[in-house]
Image (cartoon, rainbow, N blue to C red):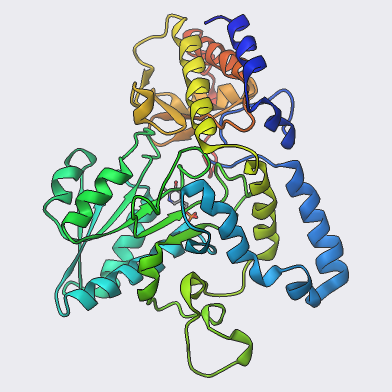
Length: 416
Ligand SMILES: *Cc1c(COP(=O)(O)O)cnc(C)c1O
């Protein structure tokens, strides 16, 4: 491929116009939408409206007048088609970490009702995102040695373990370091054959990968609002509970917003029907409104088109990169086969941190994952083929000419 070919692809790109929906500095190539999605123009207008008119003028009446109270459900309904769920299977609330805890409780309660008194296994993967492991560890400690056993399998051993261990399976579809995909449908089937329940973390999946949670009969799932969904820093997360599993929701974070009638102020807890009982406290209206507006960017697009564009962008980057003489010290750690990876490419290099910093100075925003990973996200809503082509050459030049060898690139910030 040549630069002209990249320009031609931009002309033919079905999603070329969605870039206009975002407020991105013109001179920046933003390959970090997998970590913090950019600001959509609609979010800017919505936040101004929510601040000035809703909160500012309509004050407390906004809970009813502007539908604030329904946002967790209405935002959940907007997320549902992106993950192949039914509208009443998704709720927007809390962070991924807190949602994982609540769903682990639900799954444990269901397992216990099937096998009273028995110890319940939680099978997870060693390479999982740390918060998933930390929450599972804390949950296991709380339940005690006799209640729960945490089984941490290596990614390569996961299929075997799924066929041997029965209990709760807690997995993340996209490996945050390498981008490697797990097959949700296949692994969910394997787990179900053992009588296990599954919880999938879709943080690096929602908004870029075609998902069919209802069809795959996934029991529970969680996902992130601030990555490919572009909800803004710290945007609330979402959770999904399959319709059949909703009969048996039981979790201990019984906040008043999960009550059947919160404004009756009854002294005893009586859960709302369906997914709403997984809501705990008052929703974060400013953040949730931002996510709500950001989700409108997906209204006119097909997830299959998002997937094929993000793979094509990554391929353009790779062709451009490999057309240079790249030293072996910089190597792709993502699967070579596009079908086996999410919307990111990761490379290892001992100076990955300095490379990421040197690229930022040239307007190419990537991120560094300790200890030696340079990670690039290919968000299909706002990146162009021309930008990915250019980024491939800039990364190549930075490595070949060792532009990262400068002490100012060594300084590590608290957030990388
Ligand atoms: C980003 C991410 C999270 C984020 O969790 P929060 O509690 O919302 O901060 C969780 N899991 C995975 C796999 C992630 O990539």
